[in-house]
Amino acid sequence: MTAAAVAAAAAAAEAYPRIVATLIRVTGDWNLAEDSAQDALAAALERWPRDGVPDNPGGWLMTVARNRAVDVLRRSQVEQRKLRDLAVLALTAPEPAAPGAFVDDRLRLIFTCCHPALPLEARVALTLRTICAVPTADIARAFLVTESAMSRRLSRAKTKIATAGIPYRVPAGRALTERLPGVLAVLYLLFTQGYNADGEPAFADEAIRLVRLVERLLPGQPEVPALLALFLFQHSRRDARRDAAGDLLTLDRQDRSRWDHAAIAEGTAILSRVAADGVYGLQAHIAACHATAASAQDTDWLRIAGCYDRLAAAQPSPVIALNRAVAHGYAHGPRAGLALLAAARADGALDGYPHAVAVEADLTARLGWQDRAAELFRQAAAAAFSDEERRALLARAELSTCTDAPPPHPGARSAT
Amino acid sequence: MKYMMFVCTDTSPDTDEAPEPDIDAWVAENDQAGRRLTGNELAPTASATTVRVRNGELLVSDGPFAETKEVIVGFDLLECADLDEAIEVARAHPMARWGRLELRPFAAPQ
Image (cartoon, rainbow over all chains, first blue to last red; front, side, top):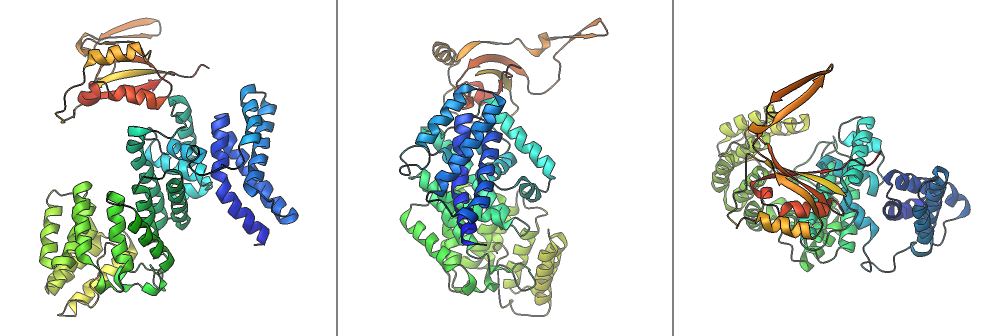
């Protein structure tokens, strides 16, 4: 790529959501806003390599997008007021004076896309499409639906925003406190879509970019930087998570020199400056313990177990209860882990969940009961969700069958 | 925007023991603010009558149009700036805790 193309791509990524958000605010027309912004990007990619990158790329894109919107509105002869507002926009809008000086249109747009009156999946898809400019086809692939089905879903969501009167506004006071977790949950899902074994890796980068944006635009909310720190710790392992064959590696088998240490340092710095004790804060502290341990054996399991105790109290869920059992198994020994595992399974929520069987197998192996452990590993393998997991679990079964001692790398299967 | 708020029962009501919001206060406050245009409690579904016309023939039958566990027990017609304002009005209604409220916007004029 030429220097101009690189500059165009970077400026576009930065400017796109602001342009879409501003045009939606002024025209109230989502499709017009998106089409105009896309056209401006296309014009930049064509002209900048030839004519050079303008001094203010964001302002240039905004002007081109605005002119395009004006053209469309003129041709369709609708609504003189929108045209007047667009004319005023030219004088006032190009770049905000200072972050926080006024409510950023992008933040309004994020809260609209993540409104709880929209179905959850539509919130994620709409955020990807409208704020991150991800092509509909890519979103459809991640959600395992056809492009036309995803198009219809996006269009239904936009129709609901208009007909139900979902406002284009950042809520204030109590409403902000109530709605922010919903926004963060969408960003979390977005990140997970990127981080899952079969996900779209680019979505993880988008989630990180968005949470940075929300942090900048909405200061004073500790769960926002906490979520950023959590993302940074997880993402720091992206180059070390797979072996040469492409199989996922558990934490204890990863080459820690290949972790992104700049990202880990940034996450650590965030946690040292914010009081992160909400659900994302606790998860970030757990991730920090893993990310900053020199080796799997040096992991501070006592601290991790303590965080899981608080997390299980704040947000009870079967998976958190399972991970808590794993943490206690390392912090206080396999018997403590097995006791918590039994409690976590008592209500049946983990029935048929192969990870729960794998955890029992691992704890059993560490008690020295190798035959029973091998049987449990085979049981977990039979129920595994992917071939990759199945192979890993069968390898552990093999290891338990042919040794009397605990395996050399007692790795939790909870994290990769 | 106008929203029809259907007041419905729910099979799993709130278990919170906080004091119950007062329906008369809710009505007075929202009437005064111009957010509630009209509304009323409805008689039990046993008193409902369903009317249809098929091929010119009038069909009148007993009961509601759908037999469900959750039933509509009242309605309020709201006039709110947007959905967030309507949600705030709805959350303060006692039936938000003992039942559920459905907010349906009026269709846009064709």
